[in-house]
Amino acid sequence: MRISQYKKAFRGRKHLIAVMAASAASLPALAGSIPAASAANTVALVGNSSVIVSEGPNHSLWYYWQAIGATSWHREKVAGNNSTYAAPSVAEAGSSSVIAVQGRSHSLWFYWQTIGTRPWHREYVGAYGTTFSAPSVARVGNSSVITAQGPNHSLWFYWQTIGTRPWHREYVGAYGTTFSAPSVAPVGNSSVIVAEGRKQSLDFYWQAIGSKPWNKELVAGKGSTYSAPSVAQSGSSSVVAAQGPRRSLEFYWQTIGATPWNPELVAGKRTTYSAPSIAQVGNSSVVVAAGKLDSLDYYWQAIGAAPWHPESVAGFGSTHSQPTVAWAGSSSVVSAEGPERSLQFYWQTIGAKPWNPELVAGKNTTYAP
Image 1 (tube, rainbow, N blue to C red):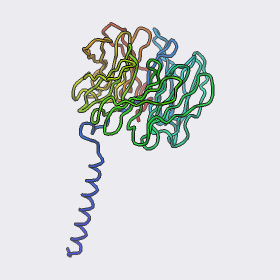
Image 2: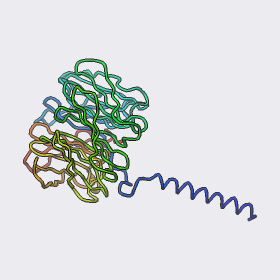
Image 3: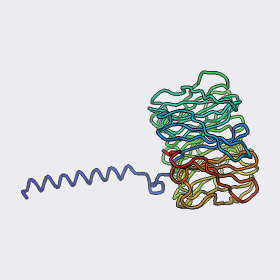
């Protein structure tokens, strides 16, 4: 080989090494280096039914419902192919089921259906290029509210008075503030939002109902948060759950109207392999997350008490997405994507021990991003 060929080969290797180094530099820190499982569906109580919304084949949108105490699941197609590009979110608002989804080209859409009736109605909330995460929807006061990550890691909030048409948009967090899908909930007399912030920190935003300014608080500092967090009201507190360093599970609470955030370790390192979901169920705060080897784990703590109690909902190989949890009637209810892209539902009577599994929809029906 000529000297010129050796030089060319050496330059090629240098280029390859540089590319590999740049790629390695762009990877997240070791504690969060394996992506957490994404959500595929969301469970909630609407009227007298447990409901689940899910992204289906070809980016379609599906709604499943089961009357509390019944055994059969009913399926409805909300929107067709190429309508849904992230996990949808569902809630009850007034007399309606409401759904928020990220649509084509990073748009934001809202669907509603009067409880007990059939047609679904669609509304355009955010234009193309506005929405870069799964949205979160809730009822706060007399409004339906949605939050989502916007362009350049910004944070946006949308609200609509129930029964009226226009959507109103508010800028919550500036560019470079938001690095996960946010979560929104009513807490006391406020709308509250949580999201992963810069350098794996955890941020909390609140706004009193009917007022304008958004107020920001730091829940936990850099290196604390490695998933999308989840927020709810439990008793007289705001409560937040998130995946922490080394795949631990972290819980934070703050008495409504007070300042300090109080951290608690729910489960130690190498226990948590998805973003968690949090809710109040009965007199307890409860958290669900995917565990080791695609298992499904449930943790509960009596409000105001200290110990966390772990339970196994489903074993190895059962769970292939972030699970979500809600309070429905006298039960805790959980949904998750199961094997072969099936849709699974689990329920447990409050205060009782066994978890009861149900197949909502068979293989190739639900798709985590």
